Image (cartoon, rainbow, N blue to C red; front, top):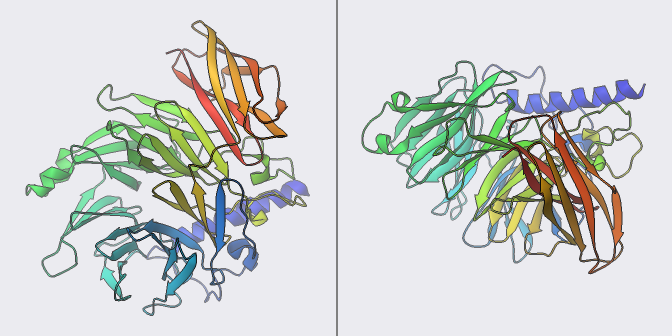
Length: 496
């Protein structure tokens, strides 16, 4: 009975996300009018009335019931702007006053869509809507403008404004679209860069220091590519960027490469939403130089496993952004926001305390579930995020000192074996820390002589760990600690 229950939950959760995506496609016609997003219980999509906080973060409840906040962006005036799925309206949150302001979109009241992309430029917001339009919102006049999107069978997803030009990835339309110039006028041109894989998805994109556009193009659970095409060629009048493409085949273990960003050294970072993995690609070294980093496994509070049928839970890294020397990404099913420090190869994953039990195998477990962290943005030292099924806006202060820290000292290293010391230093009393590790290979074993420690402030412990592998390929091993609020880990490289 338990197994049937969790399979039903997984099926319903999958169908809700599928509905949210497919409803944006031109061929989708609901069988009947939906009164409030779905015929399922409101708690599944609207959450509870509570907000929570801890040492690192605060949550703020939206004044509108079941707004389902999604994409968000900050402006130079300490405001957070975000969209609401149920109304396609824009809301503002003032960081100083801690007040919400909602500007209702009177163009439409029944149409609902997953608004994945949003950008801010010159007092204007631009965000994606359904298959046939994008939206412009003037933050001064508070007026909405509905802009025609001239392509069929499309789903505009992420959006970036750059030098009065708009770049969009058309997720199901399988292309990158450049719209120039904006604001939209009779002189505006639309350029579609068609992706090479037919019947595929075109996902997130970024632009490197040489003005190359990089994006992923993939077929779910089959194969995919990383694409580079030069944006400057278009600026110089060459409208056929398809012929200027360079295609890099993604490794077989990349399944759903949704998120993409580029660091200051022009390394490409890709997050895979169907696994625990995020990948680094260094194009200046090797066409096949993809390095696989794993997150930690999700905390059991995020998936529950009440029915005891979940054997290999995954974190599902979604979008990612670069800030200075670190990558920030949301882990959908770990209910966490992660920071990866590139130079130190250190990963900090902060758990979001509010959880919706309707999206996990929770049974009678009280502290269980996820809040669907689908959107985030970075403003100075704060990470702001939306909780799609809890109707919350959240903020993480990255300058707040963590309650513990970890370090790794390698003591003995051979070709297939590493002996090391994991040092954990506590900054709080009665700090219960579980030892965690993870790997991307089934041929690698990690053994640490303790699974859990309890430390008081200023205490530390050194634990001996041994890593052995039968693999001969380069691999990143994750080792660290986890308490109730966060996970901190570092990476060890084997076979380098």
